[in-house]
Image (cartoon, rainbow, N blue to C red; front, side):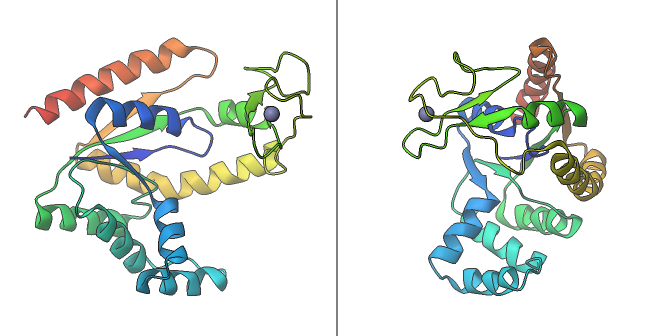
Length: 221
Ligand SMILES: [Zn+2]
């Protein structure tokens, strides 16, 4: 079975993704990792992809699709993270599933208000000590001593990308890209929304629970 995860950067996709993997014994396949591996290992597809990337161009769907497919072909149960990203990729995945006797049981869409993501991400601070790398949040999970890492005492830093304007820009790109996919999977009757409110954990718990119930029903179909 395949589960697809859609969620903006900073939406907390990692946490829910891990829960789903544990729950259903899925292997987490992140497209970013696939790209990095294929390029590092200088595979044919990796070489082709890096040609586009080095020119600052988007990697064509055809290459992305081949890369993902060759990486998931031998695995039964997968959580797809970062794929598909376009309708062309979604259509290709549909064909791949039909040909390889695989089934997408659900597409999870994390619904987080943009301003929540801006608030949470722009208050994120991390420890620059390479051996530590702890992360904190000045609003939601402050370090015991302001500005200092709890674990090693190093001065905490903010990533330059984590400022409100850059985050809003990133979110806009994400929404433009994802909206068509949301419609696509709604029509396929596979879409499950999980709502997240950074000020109220209960919202996530409640919507996650009902999403999982519906997924369970589908798995047992
Ligand atoms: Zn530290």
